[in-house]
Length: 132
Image 1 (tube, rainbow, N blue to C red):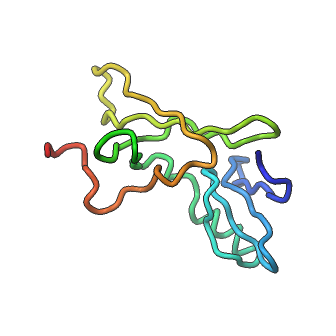
Image 2 (image 1 turned 90 degrees about the vertical axis):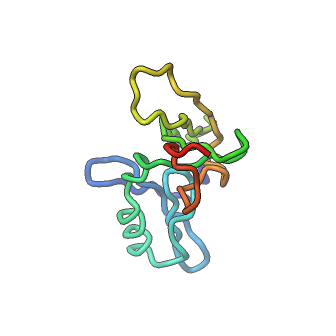
């Protein structure tokens, strides 16, 4: 459930970039995964933080830990924030490199806000192309 004091922030085309919430004397930007995207700053800087982060990262490879011995390379399928009493969810699928000949990739449904075990790629993560 989204807190009542979170204000949605949208691009000019209406696409949701995240929210801005109060924090003491400042404001904190929250991305569409429900994660902090800025320190407490003034309102315009919180808006700028969300604009800078944008949504392009949703097309990137991410890593999901805890489902296999090694972190899994995954791609976003769906990000649905909580709304009213409806719980949100984050759906990811194992990266299939766009191979349409394979069976559908395994999917994982995670809670929203996204858990920390879903994270950006770090140096040393499996690249999906090298056999270990």
